[in-house]
Image 1: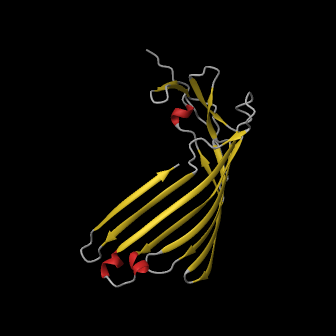
Image 2: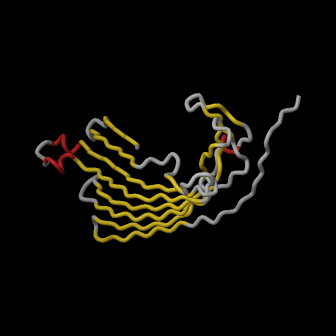
Image 3: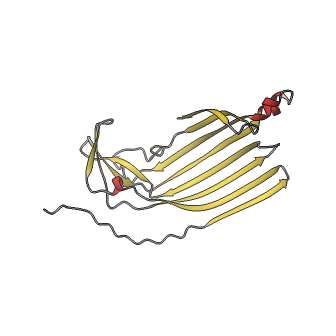
Amino acid sequence: ELNDYLSLNQTQQHFLPSVNFIYSVNKKQNLRLSYSKTLNRPEFRELAPFGFYDFTTRFFTQGNPELKISEITNIDFRYELYPGKGQIFSFSYFNKKFKNPIEIQQTVNNNTVIYQNANGAQNSGIELEFRTLLSSIFGAKYQVLDDITLYSNVAIIKSEVDITNLNAANIDQNRPLQGQSPYVFNGGIQYGSETNGWSVAANINRAG
């Protein structure tokens, strides 16, 4: 018995430079600037020439062996402040430009979707992060406050993808990138004892 199968043997070369600059304003402050180029390779199910039924969305999803690798150009700027032991406050701005991002397109058959490469996309946003000891907030009156760390980071992201090659029948030429949350929040508190060597933490996270 012979089984049909797909054999993909593609050789591709990509130049992926990465440059990082760090400027120390003083012993407690840094400025960082970075540039890099990265890739997003299609997953197996995105390349596979067969479909599968999603019981959650009730859509039949079809793979596409003609998908191209997505290229991403990244630029990041970051300001860092280190006020004391184990503490940090930072502000970041980032910008990512995508070439051939992988999106899902609805076919003529309304119950079937297929993976396709869009023309391009862009992500930009800011991120705030802090990590501090409770003793820095309430004072060092109690030794236990030196063992408790409060931390959080929040990112606000704006994304836009060019779908003119995928959605010719629709007057909309762009929309948010599929799967990209407009914001991400993480926070937590941790107690760590150097005396007995154990720690406990509580965390919370939310994505838009």
